[in-house]
Length: 363
Image (cartoon, one colour):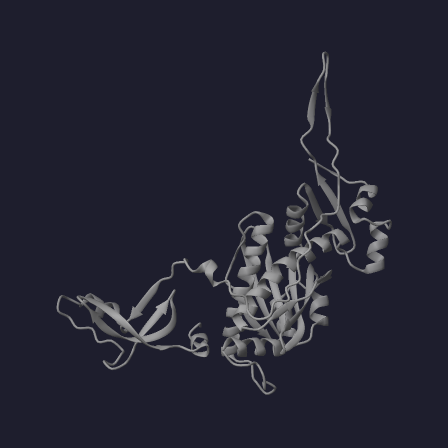
């Protein structure tokens, strides 16, 4: 059972003197300040971790400023965003419900992709955003969201698992409308100022569904549940604590415990002004990886496979003088040749693929 909080308790939770209706009319935002503070702080911590990861990938200093949080409909977003955009959609598989959408400008995505390929990110005025750039941005977003999920898991004290990111380019407002079909749905947007040292100073927007916002608020507030009823009102409810029984000689009385409601306090994050990329590879040096070498491949029909017998020869699609392919966790990273060490086969690495070549093989 849960009981609806009084208006006085709602005002206390919001730390203001205006009623919910007055505040909603004044700000045209259905999210309470408490909820926006929570989502802003969670976004600040998780995206700061993501910025550190991006800084390592790009070998540039990356900073993300304090976020701005507000509640809007999907239609509002479609009407206001500047097209074209690169949108990354991540679905929470465990720990949270719903999806997380990140949007960045196409010009910023091109710069990030160019840096991922080992270039300097300059002279890109006429650069076209192709499948190659899309793959590079997808890899960057995958690493960033992975780091952000790890940060959230630490904050929430629970496992947070995500699906692989789905990255797509929105060339027109119609593309955005198709990708987000529920135009009347209320969502929470968190906008960050994204800066990559000497190259771009832009904005990245995060979109969370209300169900996800509610769950994050419940986790951070502990014993309080936040319920949104439509765009123009918020009803804040309290999960009732188990009542304690007081034994008397002739009767048993039950008293409900009082709950003290306070605005959550979060630790101030120190400003990171350290120049250069962070060196944190030591943290993952003992992580095992699958190392494999491919001699060659061949495509056969079921009939051909069933006709194989002892002594049959299968021709591969690789010439005798061509280098062998070396894979780590299924990703092509190098080429080499076979050598014999004592009585065992080995592989001598003859070529390490460049960043651009590795990105080409991500698809």
